[in-house]
Amino acid sequence: MTGIVGRRVLLGVTGGVAAYKSAELARLLVKAGVDLRVAMTEAGARFIAPMTLQALSGQPVYSDLWDPRVPDHMGHIELSRDRELIVVAPASADFVGKLAQGLAGDLLSTLCLARRCPLMLAPAMNVEMWSNPATQRNVATLRGDGVLIAGPAAGDQACGETGLGRMLEAEELLDLIQAFFAPKALEGRRVVVTAGPTEEPIDPVRVITNSSSGKMGFAVARAARDAGAQVTLVAGPVSLPTPAGVTRVDVRTAEQMFGAVKAAIASCDIFISVAAVADYRVRNPAAQKIKKGDERSLRLELEENPDILAWVAARTKPPFCVGFAAESENLAEHARAKRAKKKIPLLAANLVQDALGGDDSAITLFDDLGEHPLGRGAKIDLARKLVAHIGALLDKR
Image (cartoon, rainbow, N blue to C red; front, side):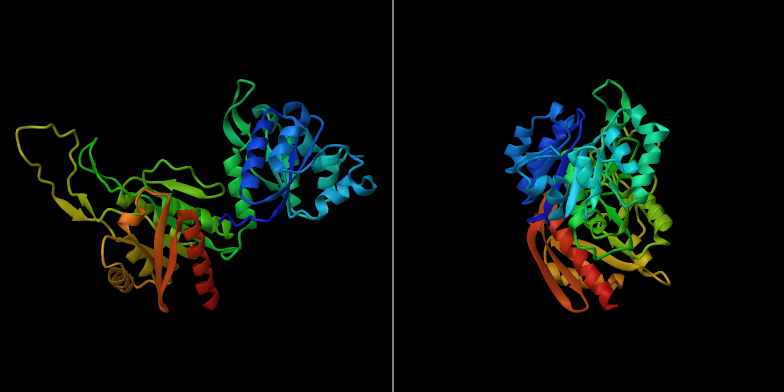
């Protein structure tokens, strides 16, 4: 479940090459169960045909301020009154400027000005247009007025230049729309999440590591962000995109992760330790690559890595600590023992054969009240259930 089934969204499309992404966004929103309505500017209709968006949304597309299909020709009122969110993607520099100054000369700008629901803009423009002081003043004004600004991203642009100004991809915008509608169980909380494996060097090219993909940790960071938290994600070496709005700190070794957690934990309300931190590291890693010789075996002297979760939980005034346990057998027995040893209020446990590398898993939560199976599902759905459980426990406190 995406959490946006039945939500009523109006998608606005202005003029820009990025309008082609609006078609994909419309498709994704409808697939997710959104009741989607589309309004376009005249310039937007020059980049993508209204018929395309009508086919994808399953509803008429509106662009005329005097459209006779709307009662009393009041499209700027009627088209937005039953909507829960307006998303303008792409939002051109011209459109951003109009809204900032309260100008309304066409249907889309007029209904944005007359709206009663929140507004999200996904800017898309040339890098110089985005960085122009006038545009930045307009964006700052809109932010001050409570308008949500999604992006832009940096990268190659259709004009051949490179930099900030690219509209976010449709999947990223869908993610932000889901976040907007998510219950805010952690509103105002500060959360630190660790994710992924660590790599402990043997020599400059070889490491000791594990098969953790980091997907669960990233899902938890995203779910906490969706729940209204300010999230810092300390990530081991994984190739996963950073959830929008999440502060990411990349590390490699367990000691580096420990240092990053120490730096972030002082102002933290909740610490969620999802990372599969290596228990041991090589005591004296070789400065140069170890050459393969005639020896049949290589002896490595190992020493224990710091226990990050135990250290955080043992602080004088610790944050609310959540641990993760991946077990290969006797799940409940090992999970209870780990929670007791770490002295933490909540632990999420799963079987490694059900979780590693995949997009879904099966998780059971262990707290003072006992066991709480979350069932099997997509990791993001399980992460949302976990975050909701954390919110409920904090409310009881």
